[in-house]
Length: 104
Ligand SMILES: [Zn+2]
Image (tube, rainbow, N blue to C red; front, side, top):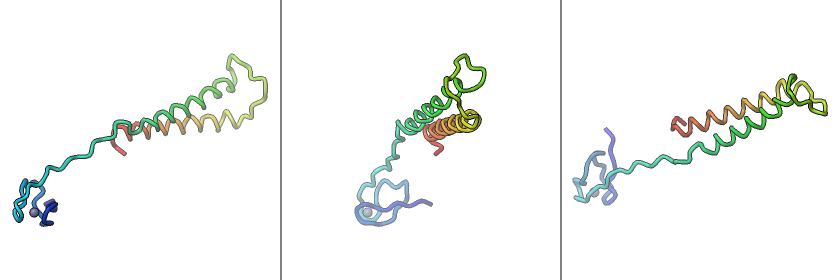
């Protein structure tokens, strides 16, 4: 059984007690901390930015795009770097969403 301490005399009382049996002082109701309304928002925004920063160059640098880039792009960039950036952004979005829901 959970017990709380009286703020006035220090006696341990039942968690649901409204009055201290020792000093007869009223024990205030426990106030649950409010959830932060902006929790996870920064992570979601950052994740969307990273995803966009990876997706736009990926679209223009990948073969078959309607725009030809006037300089050569190493294949490692379109094969590994830009998809990695997009996955990182997606991870940030999922992390922010979980923080927002309250799982983390
Ligand atoms: Zn007391």
